[in-house]
Length: 237
Image (cartoon, rainbow, N blue to C red; front, side):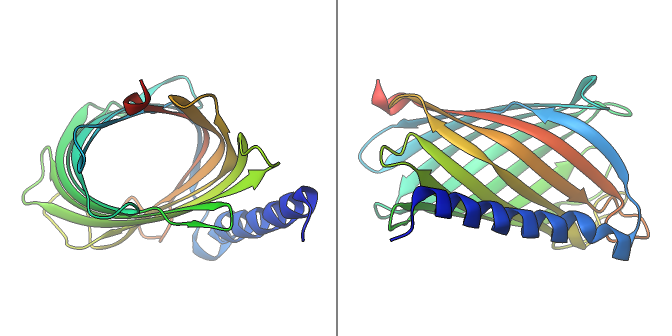
């Protein structure tokens, strides 16, 4: 049986290889513009009934080397628990962008979430389809997102966990003066998860965001993000 330290070393090695592939791959594509950012989202979840769940997200993001607000996302959603590990969601998002000029968009999204537990590992798969209504564009932009997250326990109590996840975004169509079909962005996160109590927990770590801004290269913008995200389960009150 592996010790906790052996698990940590294996996790760090996997994370380092993943990040080096993501960040180092830029030389094959282009030299993107880099920015340092801080994201501090707050995720609220509650149980509405035996099957129905509620979700409300407030997600401020600070860019330009963490000096000013870049985005603010507000996302409520209603979920239905199909099985103990599988749920289906319908949500809405209002996204405001502030740099270089103010622009907002409205989104509808559908989501399938799967949360199995294997040998102490917490695995989370999220498949999301978005219908994006972006200001000053013509048409509805469709985007698919797929996230896979794994939490590794540290110690027997499970209060601390190592976290790694990847999320891929792909535009499914092209709209006038808006998103172009194909690769949109990819996010890789490496950090820790801390359970404070039954109500509250958080993630803290580094996230790399590689973006295609419809330039001539696959990746022409890269954000280096300090991510500090909070989770509140109001059902535990």
